[in-house]
Length: 245
Length: 245
Image (tube, rainbow over all chains, first blue to last red; front, side, top):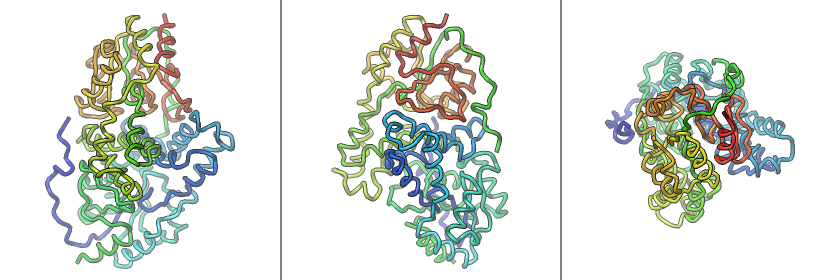
């Protein structure tokens, strides 16, 4: 197996010029998924445990099918993950309804997701300063549109993109290439913003500048490329970006 | 995005002849990872929650780096995942020791993992009937050797393989091609055994016959290729295999 890169990669050129555009990941970067935990709890399921493994499991299975060249839409992967976890022995017996109804009820949380409190002020400040904003999700483009509408920030974003179009999930290189082709700018002028190191690592490999949003103080993985910027929320990130000449 | 296959793929030819060989996934298929939960609990961490997301998170990050063509060894990915989850606000403050010591203590659980109680009888029965057995892990080959030694079943396995050699994690097609090249048999004569649908789906696409071991009664994902056999443990699976002519 090849030597890991990450910290071992050559040090990047420092970011000294304000990026012209920013691409935001959506799940957990913009969205707060607490409504899923609440719905799992309402069903009688072990909500903390299933909520904690939900997104990593969906990503694992979505990535797996990207290897096969036959991607599956996010909603169907999410449905399969929820059915497996809610249908497991020790969980299923405690649900307050039929398994399929429970899965649909849990999935309904996506229509309740809000953005994190630091998001609206942050994206408005960036946009007001002329930074062009794009949202780019492994999930459904329509669901992302709805999330941004509910939060009242849809108008700040020039593009809402989904991996449904390139047919490969991030962090496959083809996904980032799609975002770049839509944006029409060199990757080095664009800041990729995410809470997930795997996404920032993929974006850095595609040539983007990268910014980590880390709301819970998690240490950054040693094996992933170090982001150019790091902030505790999108509002604080906007301050860092706008401080650049 | 292409139409999902899974249940939509053409129905497979039924398995009517006993496979000559079997390849076993290792993490959770053979190994019982309860020792990790116990160590997380001993550290003062929310053990159920962190244990539930540990393996999906490691696989997510391992798959992500396989897309980049720069794989990272399982142990380093596991270390990064544990450091992020144990170092998060709300967890770190409750640890009974320094973060790096906590990460190493948690990782030490791998040296305590045992095999599930249904494994020894099952693999012995298969081997006694002339089925050639291979273990094939996304983890460390050395750690897999130790697991099988501790369980007293190392001698039943002709090969212990790790994705460290091909340099791509399962379910990348190159991983299954490696197992086939070592085994030297056509894929259609080999049964791939796993608890993880993403692994069985990848193996089926590589031409293997597949067997699901499902100890917790989880419903199988609609978007993954249906396994040829399904059993609640490796012992029960051996009965199904040996009933074939």
